[in-house]
Image (cartoon, rainbow, N blue to C red):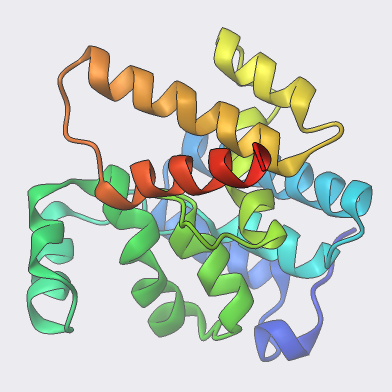
Length: 199
């Protein structure tokens, strides 16, 4: 059974977190979060990272995925977020702004956990390996079967960076093919990681 240290949760048990997640998420989304938690923990073990931080970020990464659009818009407008975020949708918001709800409702305030959650929707040119763990685990959890996801899963056996690049490539291709807006930081992340890999 998984238990997270009080230093990360301020005494909130995993069972209590799960109960609150059920109040925020439908069953398929909740089940996805549990699979991402397990995948993130496995990746953390593989790459010698903090298993508890990776698991906690994986578990909570979609905590705010189903917050109503109007509530997101209110938070963006009243809590100092970049107003350009309003051009996007919950696909972006639930990472970038979702940490607001995690802090307020769960009391989780570990900066590394929150950063990994914040970056899992957009990436970041300065992603840490912990950030990549959440980012990649979300993409390659066991019920992800698209060719790009399968490819990233294979790369994740040996390189978080290469798996992250593969995920970004798949995401950018998806958005461009559908003529959807690309969040600027996502493209910057792709360029930064490719540049680093090609040095």
